[in-house]
Length: 122
Picture (cartoon, rainbow, N blue to C red):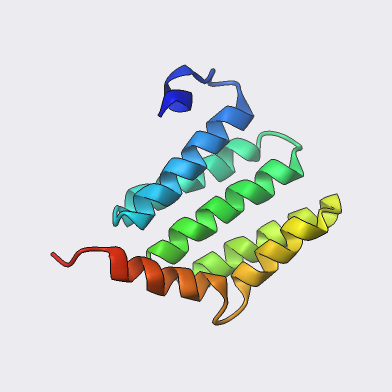
């Protein structure tokens, strides 16, 4: 990824974005542990700032990686935490998106089922 190669280590926005996006894609492609680890590092990157939007978005990247790995409870918890951050910021659109992801049988569950079907059996 271009951003991974050129982003300054101190550029929190670029660092969390490439880590979160690459992490969820790795998990979606079946590399669950690496995807979750990378997505979690995106969350860690955002915790060094006071940017609640970035923290919420990083948590949703993590939730997507967790859902792709079939870890629906973890995904729901990450999405619920993202929702709380978006609500604190006053971002009702992103809060609603996070809430839908966290619902039992909601987006996280649907995402996990859809992703597992795409993962080839070994």
